[in-house]
Image (cartoon, rainbow, N blue to C red; front, side):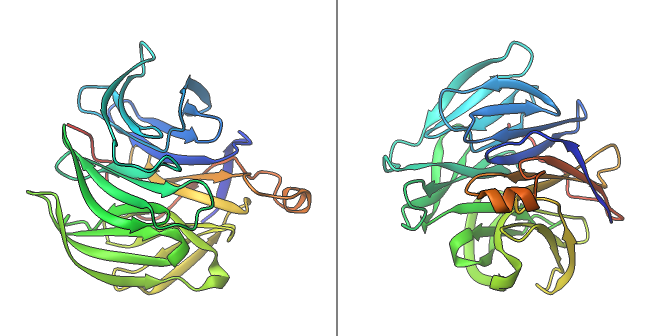
Length: 282
């Protein structure tokens, strides 16, 4: 599998790629620059850091910004606040998130000050905000097994991918277990997606790669990416076999930027598998 650069965006913190199957559009974010992209185009600039987004059944996008959940109209380019995370500490912000098979929006938060304090959480939003997990440092990658009965979640500094029994009807988590303990030499596990065979595809911050793991948690493949800080990935394209990959330049020194000049770019890789669909909100 070959990774190709499709947008040399030089994003400070490229993140949150999501695929809208209705319009065959890839949306993604530069969190630090507060930008929402539609493919190569800057669609909007927000007042607060946007951490994650997902398509909605009504054609809009749902976006998690620093402490708010917004409905964003991509045609009119207007946003409306749906809810706020009122219990979040001042030093936190929204990070990764996506919708579950029933249409809830799950979004996590993180310690933004030094990225070391377990002040973050994972929430579910279905019109009201429901806390699911506490004690997170950097709540990150979220994805589901093909049957929807297992939720996988990453808290990046722990280097752990945890698995939870997931009740799609109620949206509740149970029976946590460690699914993968990522070796330090691979980098830090960041964003994540899954395919219809149940494999996990994990972006590796500081690892310049995407790693692929079996449903049992065995490392299957390491795919090099020409960016040091690989942040997230999502399947898209007409056949959902194209993996779109975001990256970041944040925190890189001159030597690292010289070695990885395309860091902050958006990449694409044609795979031999079919990814899980991007679930819609609503």
